Length: 640
Image (tube, rainbow, N blue to C red):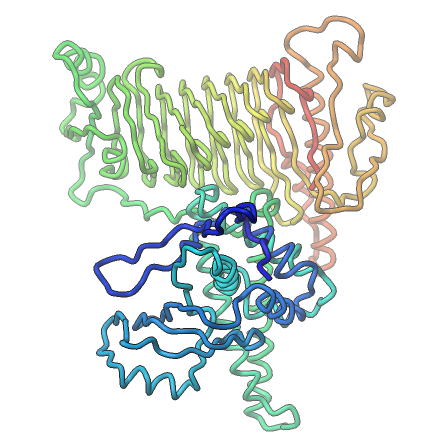
């Protein structure tokens, strides 16, 4: 009778059986008994229970029947005690019968009554009256099995936990209305939602994305409720004006609902969440820029944990007197760089003295300010340890960072994100943990003479519509050096890129990689590596690539063979071939984007397509970059 499906195991039959679940002690000094601890299950335990025992390969329309069948096999039919938990009370009951199809249990009150109430007076008489009104039936979702050392009720407790978790975190009210009922519900819905739940639980999803996911989910539930109420009130045979208005409103709600469901699917799909998620995730909403002080004047914010008299004298002589001695400036002192930045108004300056500054919250720069390290970057170090948010976020119209070293520890977000506005960085060092510097659409980055390394993703990630100038930087020991995103939407503007005299070396994948849609026209597709070798190196013409039909599996389809191998002789460290290959691919992509935009304008009946579009190439200048020891070559294309 006892199945063992859910991550627990029993002792050998010759040993005395006992529970393998922990006791969940109740808070406070209440008189209710303890229950089983079941809500600390691992991802794979829940995954296995849903896949192998509860849902299997059922379709959406079969979820109810499969769930009932699972409960019938696992849950003890009677004679066990549970805490009936609601928003206003907890009370001890005895289960006398289980109705798995209705997801309810028939219960009797345990006498003398043991209960705890929240904001209401609970008596034995009122509880008996409540049970009589519900025919002694209570939802299984509201029952928690009382702890028992024998092991006889472990599986019942776990089955109810899986049921509760499923209806709270996995099932959506609109799932059963999905028009395509031929798919495997576990694969399409359960697995991605379960993975997202644990990714959020374990701080692997940016805080901004989590907040937007929850708000989208709440909005979708609200719209579904509105739509359902409106639909139930409609008379299909009626031709009254009121019903016609309701029909139009219903269609509008339906379209909103479908858009929200598509948005949720992007959140729930791990690949789309990180490759395309930028379209639906604006990140944390930075506070609005303060602008200049109402009273006028500017402030120099000095950040120092401690300083010697000699250091202070040097700072005044070298920095403050030559640049900030006018009456316009006053000086304020801080020990924390985050507090200093938060205190800034437009035009302020933050000077960070030598030292190691450990911070736990993001540095959010919303005004046009300058943050400068006084000394060499290795002497002015800011490190961040907690996981969830970006290290530095810049939305100011004109921001400047210089002479600073940023160190990430145990992070899940990029080290620096330019969300909007313009950021100039000079002589900075970035020791990354996940992605390095991210330049969002409509943002501008100038990164000069900086050193960036250690990213588990790309060192620099460039989004459509951004302007990015990289001059004289070292980008190394990342998964990819520079990643340029070109998404499917032809309305996305091309990024404008300057790459001059950068040394891009020792990256695991490519020096530079272009991410673009996999459904490109045949003539636009880049070549496979073996085909690339057969083409004339002068023309740069590419042959047709064999692309897998499975859109869900992105595939690298371009690889530059190391010139030293291709030509059979040594080459100069400044790989001209790498720079040329990047130019060729970006020009081709720019031309395709131009063609799509032109066709779209014609389709919309525009009088004249903008012939200047092609002149706005993806790059402004790309030359003098050196590519050394990158695992897959200088340049590649990633199709998704």
